[in-house]
Length: 497
Image 1 (tube, one colour):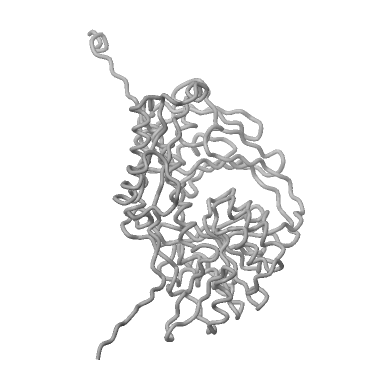
Image 2: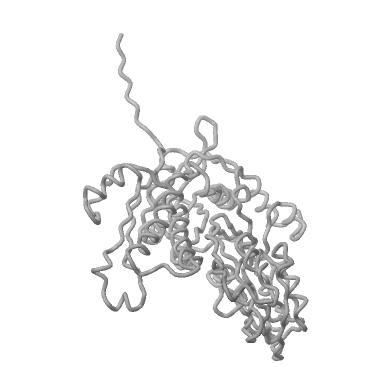
């Protein structure tokens, strides 16, 4: 019997695997205790206080701070977030030998499974402890979830195990020490290569760490600790249980700004209320390091930072009118009594306070170093734009052409992303108060007044030849109008007898 391919031939153009936006509600409390965590286990993830108590003990500092986080209502868990307990090696540590580990990129089951289920002849090559091994004939069509995919990889390995951790496939060598090694997955040239699909190839967002012999690790700086944690889990908010010293503030504040991580620190004492170059809080404000959030507590209550962080990281940007301000919010720590002189001094240098108004607890926010919701919202928006644009290019089965039609697709994608943030209440229609603009001034101002944003792509005809040869898009500009928030008001009452 003749094949139908003599007449009709078909081919499937699979959709590329999209990547997820950053989760802005991944918060981290960093401990210096060596009782549980270590250099080899930098962090643990928690969705409730019971899991913290089970790992660290109900009376531990970690559990006490976790109680503060989970007792804050709402908290990051309600918005799809997670509490990370991170580790700072404040003193020398005896570090046991480690195993080589390949941590794959975080996977999205709805996006991945339709692609993976089409593979019945999966293959890959990987080196385990210096010995190459090849797996072939892997049937991914039977996988119902990400755990099934991890199990299939695990069954194909010798001398190593595969597991699913935080929606990523993690391959770990069965040995430890310097001889414990792994490689990225590579294509063996037969069947359908699955290293790219599972995010375990060198070109993916996976990370490879080789095994190390046992050693004594010297104490590290707080900056080293938070950098190490950030490299392993994408935290967006962080605080140290131990006080940040004055001399450590400049480097941590600079790191916070550069890495788009909001850091929270509590200051206590009159010296922090002064506009003085010796005051690290004032220097943070002068440097406009608005991702480093300074809080004042005359009682030195460090749990204030934990509750403030927990209340901040609660926005699900997929909702409508969900954007918040911290001003006047209630936290899960005792409010403190302040006179107006102290409140004004704290606000002048850029510190928020938690006090009472008519015996009701409330956060009073300072505008000196910006309001916390502004960097929080803008970090989320910038990431959403970057990821959504990447996914447009990645998931298009053919290509986004370097034509007017292609650039229009990119403009449309950027507009849809921005519309989501208008819907969330981050941006809103209003008057543009800055003197600068781009494109036609009338069109620009009308768009801002009517929809809260304006998007404009450069003209392809004006694009430099070198950019076109490198397949770059013309520059796309977007202007957005911040919705802001009302924190106070003056009311004039006219009385007539």
